[in-house]
Length: 180
Ligand code: HEC
Image (tube, rainbow, N blue to C red):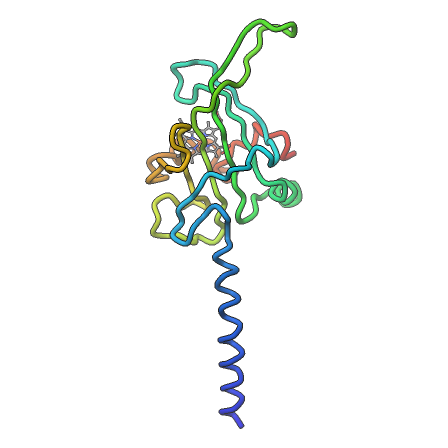
């Protein structure tokens, strides 16, 4: 009797397991099993969180920085004050255009220069992949080649500059009124 029960249990577990595996593979449509990150195509249809503008052409961040995330992440953040697992933040940087308008001297966004991407990973899924850590996956794409992630080591390429935002999960939330 015990053996039959054990067998029944083993069968039940083995039929359930394959259902768990694909669920975890679906962690994010923009992250593959090894942790490679792709730039989401439709991010401009997501929620616009806010804009930073760096007008000094010699500054490292020269450009208009528009930041987007998924609608469900905004809803969750408003409730919990945390970015839920799978949240994608896309920062699109475009050239600064400027000139006199009927409103006054204005700056606005020109052609795209780069995209910065962060993907929230609350479970530390890719401990051996150097673009993952501190709760996020980190990526950078240039307009010339939106398929190639130029970030190879987030600690060297990204983290240093995000230290001032460490207490808010590395994100500069003060620039994103949509989260309030
Ligand atoms: C020169 C410093 C610097 C470097 C290097 C840098 N960041 Fe940032 N990043 C910032 C600052 C400052 C902001 C917010 C203000 C702004 O955009 O000017 C920001 C904002 C972002 C945002 C928008 C969400 C947020 O955190 O507010 C993303 C996404 C992002 N960075 C990803 C990255 C990734 C990925 C890398 C590495 C490939 C990286 N950053 C490297 C300074 C930097």
